[in-house]
Image (spheres, rainbow, N blue to C red):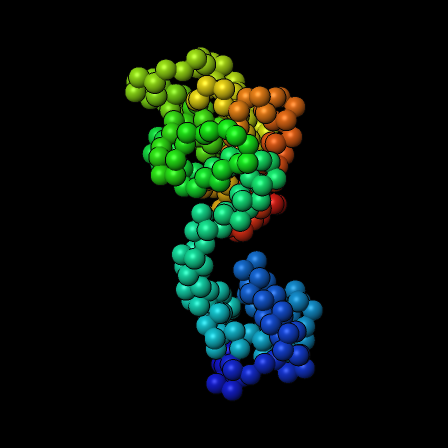
Length: 264
């Protein structure tokens, strides 16, 4: 199938400009889902073959699709270029910032954003709450994984063998921790099931926190957020309510990073 310069640059006949854009996006999604022939695309999108051909030809001309005779259509190199640009623009702190600001304002407590940095949690951002509570964390510092809510949230997808390694690693580092390995593993199994983690004054005296992981388009944990406050403001009932808010905020950040609900 050949595409002319005229057909490659012209909108599909019979469709308005906005309809053409929407149909073009539908075509890209259909090809991504496996519809590679003109007949399959026509059937999937409910368009006649001539309209479908004009749409596909335009997308091929703009390099959003490629076409190989006897093979069919495939996603084109332009999408790869845009994907790399989008990834560069969508840095985690930039994407998360507005969401964690809202969470801090709504909760009144300090909100952290962090990522996994080897065997530590690296804090990328911190929004102070409006309570008179001093949280000693700083942007750019690293914190242990096993005793912080944020650290635990970052490793919820890891196998149990990896959890054991990380727990023992911090033992070898000489860090004091009042929770036994068996108890900690039991807690981690529970956290992995519910999708959030807690710090019950394990890392800092009289400070509690609730944390949840942030995921990317591949459903991989790429960061975590947490809400931290003094224990007097964080009884069990409030922590349960906060867990919903923290998970919802992490979910919104994840959606902005390309994660999809149906991958859970």
